Amino acid sequence: MLNEARFACARFAVMESFLLIFLPLVALMVKQVALAEVFLWPQPRSISWGSGLPIFLSDSFHFRLPDQSPPELLLAASRYRRLIFREKWVPVAVSTNKTSFVADVIPLELSYLTVSVADLHADLQQGVKEGYTLTIPDGGGSNTSLKADTVWGALHGFETFSQLVQWDKVAGKVVLERGVTLSDAPLYGYRGIMLDVARNFYPIPDLMRTVRAMAHNKLNVLHLHFTDSQSFPLEILSEPELASKGTFGPQFIYYASDIRRLVSYARYYGVRIVPEIDNPGHSGSWAGAYPDLVTCYDKFWLPDMAVEPAPGQLNPLKNETYRVLKNVIDDVASAFPDQLFHGGKDEPITACWESSPDIAEYLKQGNNTLSTLLEKFVRLTHPYITSNNKTAIYWEDILLSDDVHVSSSFLPPETTILETWNEGPLNTKRLTAAGYRTIVASADFYYLDCGIGDFVGNNTNVDQQVNPTPGTPSYNYGGSGGSWCAPYKTWQRIYDYDITYNLTKEEAGLVMGGEVCLWSEQADETVLDGLLWPRASALAESLWSGNRDGKGERRSVDALYRLSDWRYHMVSRGIKAMPIQPLWCLKHPGECNYA
Image (cartoon, helix red, strand yellow):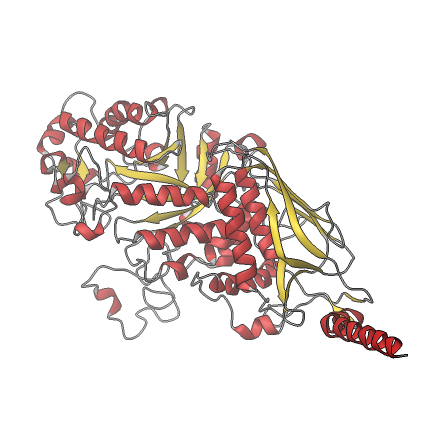
């Protein structure tokens, strides 16, 4: 009898322990449950949800990696595991999902995700495969997998997985709402941000944070506009005085050790760094070290010496110009492993060159023009880039400028990529029709500094207390406000741009992708995040999976809701992205649309 009592007590204790441990979980599962919405950014190319129960991530969840995994894959797996369990993300947006179920079983836990990579050694270069598939059957189990073409595709898969899971406050677990099958790859191989680090300086930690944000958005190219007339902030070991005499001070220089650190960091996030050394225009800062090689640097910028303060252009008639420029290109090419090298070539100003006595004399001889002068310069300097096994990128001006341009015979399409920034789809058409691979950076859509006014002082245009032309827009009343590329480019404007508009199939095939551009006359690290994000996120999705749904319809309404939640998600990850709507709109789905 005593033994039976002891057995009963023991059985009751076991049952009580079971109930204490599992009853909250069972209660969670047996009631009517509305499936939470998952807000992914960028939207994958193809996604299919299962119909089963939520799947909890085990506390010991990990990514099961292939043997011989390179350090980029090892560190990414560790980084994303920490992120998933640390951030405990709960969407800010109210779910619009009306699907629900009644469950009477405890969901399974997912202990690991098996990762396989077809090519573990593919380098991070333009054109590398970035696709992946993610399979998590209903209920989890051992058939879960992340399969990627390359390590860089696997990194994108990790990012998507980190957005698929959420924090279940009741269960105290990281949860995947249902099983999912996902197939994903980018539409374009070049998805970037151009950041001007010459007009104002951005410390390395801020550039690293930008790289991390880019990886979260599946952007893969950070184009750094390193030099301009205002400063030359990049240390050149063979020409050290360019930086020491051409920048704002020693604390405003990117030293060789800084560059090594940034390039290495970016690689671990799957982001390539493409350097730009602008020349022969926008080169006033070179005069600190080499005043004899720069025209008009000592003149006032108005009325026609430069498009903005400060003036200065390299003199193509000076032999020393070529020695110095070759040293610069060789040093920069060796510091940045990417196969693309941006050589500038935008906005050569005629009056600046014509102010030079030797160039003025050159123009009097035979059929010489400023265009033949630029052709001489390009003929001699283009091989400086290609001899370093790089493909040259130039701004479109080199071919399309009305004032100064070169013949296409000086720009072999095999070694030349052109970047368009004027006239929207019209110039994209002109470049691709001429047979050039093209990067789209249209100021009409992709310039992030537009619409914030002018930076030049003593501007009497702002002294208007009333509209001088009532009923008609003017400078301060519905006009540009001093911004040459006004209005401000909203995320919708960026998202809705069709970068292959009006192109033939062959021409569209030459479009490599695009990038948003932040010129820094009025920007530095203090406002960087808000100016970039989430507008750069809009570019990211449009170039990754497009701005239309499977029926060919614009998905900007769906994108708005996802992007607004994604903005909060980025903020939780330490990216100070700007809000795109009042928070009220996220709590009242559909109430903030026109219809």
